[in-house]
Each structure stands twice: as C-alpha cells, then as structure tokens.
Length: 67
Image (cartoon, rainbow, N blue to C red; front, side):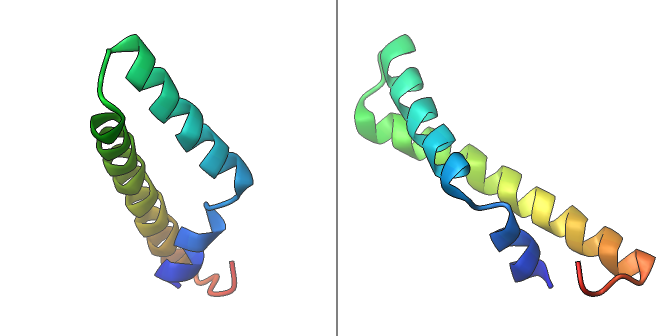
C-alpha cells in the first residue's frame, strides 16, 4: 500500500517540477549543477515519503484499502 501511494504521486508534472527547481536553484543561488540536484532531490524525496506515509496511514485507519 505504501508503494502504491508513493507511485501515485509520481507523474510527468512532478518530473518537470523537479527539473525546473534544479535549474532555478542553480541560477538563483549560484549553485553547481550537482549541488542543486542533490538539494532538490533530497527535499522532494522527503516530501514524497511523508506524503506516501500519511496517505497509507490514513487509508488503513479509514478501512479503505483500495485507494
């Protein structure tokens, strides 16, 4: 169930958002490409794990195992 919630958050818009964030942080903060990638990916990964965890928790508490 956790994996299903995690994968439900991933789509083409999520990837496009990540690309734009990497480019934006690289330009605005003057970071190298590697530092911008590591920073953005780590924050997005933490966000995805938190959203998937909360989604799995609330669906299991509500008794709704299919969504």
